[in-house]
Image 1 (cartoon, rainbow, N blue to C red):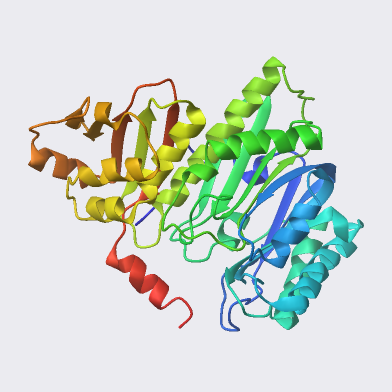
Image 2: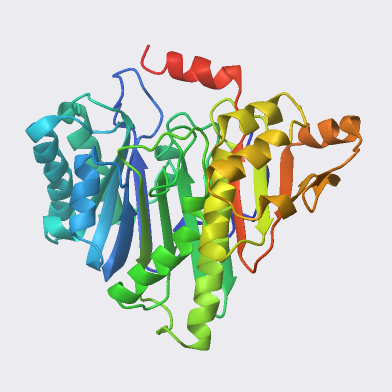
Length: 400
C-alpha cells in the first residue's frame, strides 16, 4: 500500500542545524542496482549520539559496534541498505570496522566516532569492492557539505514502498527524522532503522534516557509480522547547535513531546507500509493496571495473525481480539468493551447485537481503529497492519 499522509515531513532531517547528509549508489545488493543505498549522516562537530539496537541474539556486526559506542559524543553514522552483514562471521566484523574507518578518515575523527548500520539480506558477505568506494564518496560529500543528488530517506529503504519522514519545530528547537521498515517488524527494539536529530544541546546520557522513554511509546509499539530483525537500530542525535536543554526543565518537556511526536509518526508510517498491507491497524486501550501493561496488551492484539487476517478480510470476528488479550494475560475480561471503528461489538463483557455490515465497512478503511476498555488507569496504543497473501509472496521471493 502507499504510505498515507501523517505528520508533515517539514522540517526534514537535512534542515536540522549542525547535521549534514550525503547519499550515493554503491550497488550493494547487485551490480546492476542504480538506486542510492549508502548514506552518511554527520555532525559539524562532536555531538551527543544515543541508540537502541535489536535484542535479537543474532544481532548484526553493525548493531554490536553501535551499541558499544553509545551514548557518547560522536561524529557520524554510516548506513548501507541491500545487505544486513548479519551472520557473516569474523569477516563481517572486519568489514563493519572498515566502513567506520573509511568515514572517520574523511571526517578527521577516530573510527569509534562513527556508528554503523546495515540492512538487507542476512548471511551474505558485504561486497566491499563496491561498498567501500561508495562509503568513501559519501563521506567526502558530507565532509565538503556538498549537495547530494539523493536523500538519506531514500537510500536506507529495502522492501519499503515509500520514504518515511517526519519533522516539527517547537520551543525554538528543530526535530526531524527518517525511518525504513516494512517487513520483520516486531517490538524488541523497533524492527527498523530510524535516525532522528535535534539541534538541542543535550548530554549523551540524558539523550539516551530520552530515547528509551520515547521508543517505549512509539517504535516498540509496532508489529507487522511478529519477526524481529537482526539489524534494528534507532539513533537519536543532538547536534548542540541550539539551546541547552536539561531534564526536569520546561524545555525538556517540550523536547520530549516533540521527539515523541516525530517518532510516533515514523512508527505509524512503518506499520502502514507493512509488506503487502492495505490497512493501518491502530489498537487503543483505556484501562488495565498501568501504562506498561496496557502497551503490552495492545501489542498482543496488533501482533495476532488471526486478528490481522480478519482485518484483511473485513471480517468483524471480534472474538479473536478478546482471545489475543487473554493470551497476553489481560485481567477483568468479563468487563471488557470492544469497538471496531464506531461499532460497539462488546460492552462490559456483554456481546452486542451489532450491524455486521457497518463493522465490515469500518475494517475496509485505510486506517482501522480498534478501541478497547478495561477497568484500571492504564493507557496504551499500538500500530500494525493487515496480513495478506501478498506478504507471503514478497517473502517467498525475497532473495530470488
